[in-house]
Structure formats: structure tokens, C-alpha cells
Length: 435
Ligand SMILES: Cc1ncc(COP(=O)(O)O)c(C=O)c1O
Image (cartoon, rainbow, N blue to C red; front, side, top):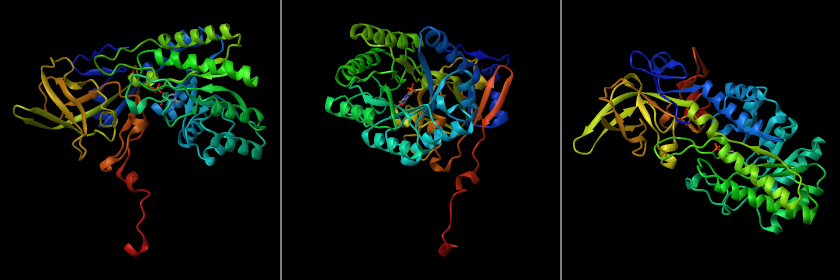
């Protein structure tokens, strides 16, 4: 979905009904701005084209993409489940009173402490990544007299066309239980024997920012073969199949975002086809997109500071943020589109490179961006920064994290306060001998 660009009468870029230049003035920059309307539109698309279309399906929001108390509330109202991957994410959901039975708890190295919290709170599903974790979950269940419901994360052994740091379904992966029979069936047999776990099925996640449904379909095919063999060999009936997320969104030219049904129809059709072929009961099918729900719902506003022209080479325009609030360009070479918010009605006939303020040559947000004539003080709006920006933000160079403002037509409110310098040093201690 490429959002149409709205411009105010005075030429300012309008996002979520709010004049972004006014937002920058009121809240300062850098500033994350999140549109509630876009999140709701995405959730509506999921409801209409997946949840209401098929029987016995569920959709979870992968909270690692962007999480705070307000987003938990929005996601809960939209009727989605929540995928968390750490005690910190679970704690956030607990503080937002998110229904614990609607949580999927992922992670390849959950600690005992994290599992104890999850099991004591009766989270809906624990997605067990390995045998070490299975033992721990069973042991904690026994001590707490509980029987947590679990899924096994499996490694389906498929490659996806995306950045190598975000492919997860290939055999050589830190995630999940390999499909080699002696490994997966050993895990399944143990899970079936243990008294304090209830094994419901399987989970896979093939990667992130994927535009082609082939890897999802191939992974579904492989897991359906596994489901049949599990029934034939161990009498295990799979009741749930969680197919992860990974659906790509538009960032820049060449990114061809697809409707949710492009992925979900193909997954569901493959499950139905294989269930018929193998005479298996249909499992509940779950999806868990993160980026697809939140990516386009966010933008980041910056103020342009120094503008340096190197004759015959390039012009650098530096902003008041950079890799601390958006590590993705430095980490993955991710590309973004942007515009000058206070000159949104002008022709973009110059080319500049947007540099961050960190003491790193690699802190470049956008190479060769087309802009109108630039001046220091102009406001840059980087688009589609909703996913994996705020959630990956850090304090490199002791730069405080920006605030997050939620906007909707005629409404705007801070949902995350800007960090202060006091916050940055609040946990530092001087040893006695240095006082
Ligand atoms: C298990 C799992 N589910 C869902 C997601 C969400 O991925 P995306 O934001 O690409 O949809 C991830 C991302 O890493 C994941 O690891």
C-alpha cells in the first residue's frame, strides 16, 4: 500500500491528519509519529481477508516490530493476538493488561526466569525452540502444577529472498528444531510423554520483508509432510500450525507490497490441500505479521542541520538523529524514501545524502535523496519507519531516544516520552574509591 501524500495549504506534509511541521515544533525532533488509522486499516484488512474468510484461524501482531503500552491497547481492540519474544516484551504486555491467553511466547534462548513468568501468567502458547527449553518448561510446569500449551518451532529448511540477517527458515539457522527425523521425532515423543506440557503443533517463520509467497508455501508443504508423518509414526494429531510473519512492505522503488491474502490464501490452500490428501483434520492456522501491520504506520521527523557540499562529489545534509533511532540502514543497508516536510509542495530537483549525527562514517540514513533547495532548519520526514526503528533504537553516542506521538484525524498524543540525559545516566554508579 503506497499511501497518498497529503499536503496542507501552506505546503506542509500532513500525516495521519496532523501537520508534520507543527508536530516537529510542538514535540521537537527527532520524533517518531505513528498513525492509529493506518494500523487499524491494516488490522481491518487482516480481519476481512483472513479472519472472517476462514474458519479456525488466528492472527497475532509480532510486537518486536514496535511495542509499548498504547500499541498493546490498539492491537487488543483490533482483536489480534500478540507475539512476544522476551520477558521485556511480555512485561510490557502484562503492564498493558493484555489478555495472557492471547500471547505467543517465542525466543530461541528463553531463560528459566522468563519461562517461569510466562507459565505463572498462563500465557496462551509457549513456542518451544529446542529440547533444552522443553525440559525446562516441563520442569517448571511440574513445580507450578500447570500444563502449559506448547508449539514446536521447527526449521523448515527453505531459503527466502531477503537480507541474510532476516532469513530464518534455512537449515543453517539458530532458530528451531531441525526436521531430521531422529531430532524432531525425539522431541515430539518426549513432549507427548511429559506430563506437564501439552503439545498442540508447530511453528515456522521463514524470514522478514519477503514479497514472494513461495517460501511460505514451501515451508507449509514441508510442515504438512511432518504433520502426516507425526500422525503415522507417533499417532500425534496436530491441532495448531503457526506460520509466522515476514510479509514485505513498500520502502522504496522495487518493493512490491502484496495484499495480506496473497500470502494467507496460499498458506491456507496448501494446508487444506494436504489435509485432504493425507486425510488429516484441519489444524488452526495462525499468522503473525509485524512489519506489515506497523511499518507504514510510522514516519520519523528530523531537523536538517549542517549542509556540506563537496564540489563534484556530493552534498551531505546532516540531521539531528540517525543510526541510534534507525539502525536499519547501517545494519542491513535498508533504503527509505523521505521528503522535506515544510516544502512538500515543491519540486525535488536537487540530490543530497542524508547523514546522521553519530561519529560513524556509516551513519548515513539515505543516499542520493531528491529534495527541493535545502536550508538548515528544514524538516525531513522519513517514511515507513514504523517497524524495527523505535524497537531497535539505542543510545549510541549518548543520544536520547526520541518521543513517539500517536496521531489520528484531529488527535495527537505522546505515547512515549522523549528520553532525558538523566535517564541515560540514571543507573550509573561511581565506586567509592573514585568518589
Ligand atoms: C517468530 C516470528 N514471528 C513473526 C515475526 C515478524 O516478522 P515480520 O515483522 O517480518 O512480519 C518474526 C520476526 O522476526 C519472528 O521471528
